Figure 1 (cartoon, rainbow, N blue to C red):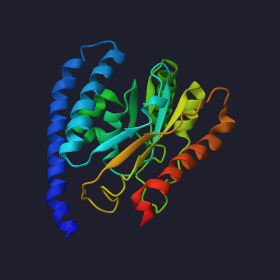
Figure 2 (cartoon, rainbow, N blue to C red):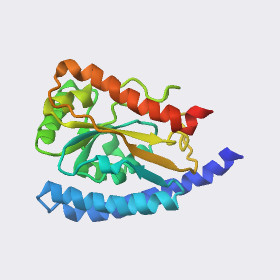
Figure 3 (tube, rainbow, N blue to C red):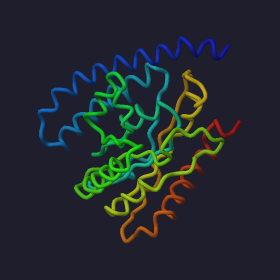
Figure 4 (cartoon, one colour):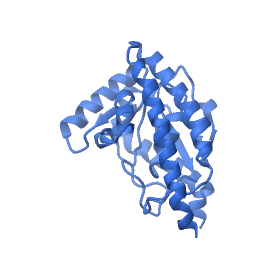
Length: 250
């Protein structure tokens, strides 16, 4: 019965999201004339907040509560590192992080209708199959961070299909944070995995919590600290999910 209901609900979620993306594309495009990137991104995330977080997540019966936002200081630079569960990661992170930042996305996403055009305007795409592309992206990320622009990186790389709360993380996010001496801001997306299981195309209604955990300063850290920093972040997010995420209480 649950799966039967999921089919029309999933269609509703997809259609309403596509409509919101089309509206945002119409809003974003004229903003390209604004040369000040910080000002342009501030406007973009203002519309993301109200059209995605405050409006779409509620009419889609996928509301989100944000906790710990006060831990993020507007005058500091962060590499935001959330856990990666499913396609809903994108709308939640793109609308609930009220800070000057851009996401790192895989180049394949730019081929998506409408969403790809939006991401091309606000993100740093990387071709994961090209060593040259990865190198250039890394250099660009460090340059951005040193210039005060934050980044959003899913350190697990792909959606977590393991039974563990957090799959093995890659070094990249932590390596660039240390190279730029920027803060690392772990984010736990709680109860997200149950809204769209990784082995299913269907969505289910439910509430999630997006919690900013205590940021970690990388001041004084070196390349030798990458592994311990990565493990620390993985442990922080994993502990929260194990304790509070309904998926892991079954």
